Amino acid sequence: MEDFSAKFVSQKISKTRWRPVPAAALQPPELFATGSWDNEFFDQERIVAASSTGSVTIFRHHQNNQTLSINQRWERAHYHVDPDTPFYGGASCTGVICNNPEIVTVGEDGRINLFRADHREAVRTIENADSSTLHAVTFLRTTEILTVNSIGQLKIWDFRQQRNEPSQIFSLTGDRIPLHCVDRHPNQQHIVATGGQDGMLSIWDVRQGSMPVSLLNAHEAEMWEVHFHPSNPDHLFTCSEDGSLWHWDTSTDVSEKPSFFHQGGRSTTLPSHAANQSVISAWLSNNPTKDRMEITNLVPNQTLSVNSLDVLGPCLVCGTDAEAIYVNRHLFA
Image: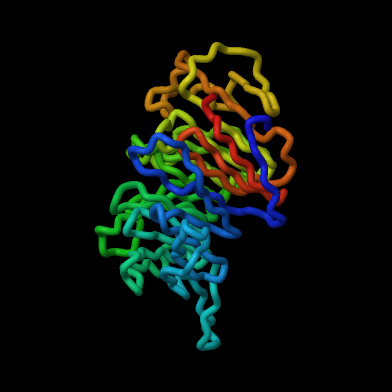
């Protein structure tokens, strides 16, 4: 962990996100936010936070005095209805994604909300989108989103359609293992990565089939987040309950070496079926003669869960159950 700087904050960190930098900016990011549940930067001044009480809040960051103020709040974005009483019980908002001016949230109540920052009410709500808990959401395109749920399904929703049903459903074979996280390739929108309770990394091509094109043995416990690098998507990052944070690199031409994984070092042999992955769209080739991945465990000595990560430019930030925040500013050094 010699490339990391650490800050102990006396509380468990479950979400970390970099503040976006201007597109033409040459300097690396300097500011990130941490949360105790879920959050996403909306723009350079505002951050959206999702709560276990079911509320969704936009906070404004005041750079002059480094404070936050509430800009807007939707109190009961997610809730359970008690059929025996007139009361609404809060349901955890488990995922939020932003594409200014739109915000999409999902929750353990199986509800999907589409908000806009200038509207007091939801623009669109799909009340019974899923009978199971929705764990995460991301944009596929401007009008389409992807969700993952607790029974191993990946679903595409098209907001242009008035019916409250997914336009496509994908699922893992065998046991219905919960999926916890999802991310879309920033340049090739048909390529999607998910991670779940069994620690497997799944790569999907949403143009074809209903099952993942690759299942890669990864972590030894739940995978909490997966992120393609936003400007260099041959690089992908995953973090897990087992205390590891992996950097998957498909950009390097690596010769075959004995099959083992260095804790904290580099391995040129892929776990499981990953050895067949290559750089054709970097993630979809099954030609074993193509380039191999390099895999690095960035926090080899970590024993408690790495709950969240974010990458921007050469910088990575992650939060852990060890009550620490780690920052690496030299990912590609």
